[in-house]
Image (cartoon, rainbow, N blue to C red; front, top):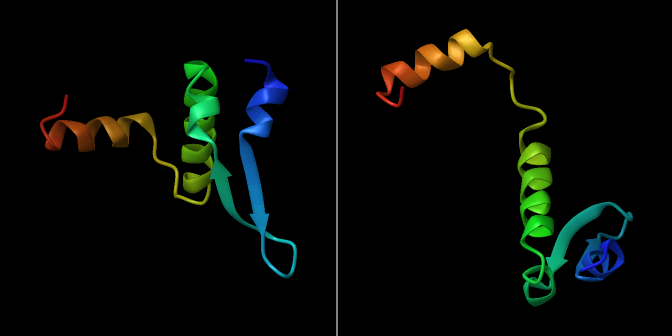
Length: 70
């Protein structure tokens, strides 16, 4: 799937002040290229977390150890 095809699978819906509000995704088209779908997921995850407070690796490691995940 070409990048242009992937972009055709995504529609951005805007509100009355022209701000992005919703994204509509044609999963049938994106499913043809798993890498593009994974990239889209990564971009969305980053965007959703961009305003979260950063933590150092040491802090994250300590927290994971407390949770028994490391």
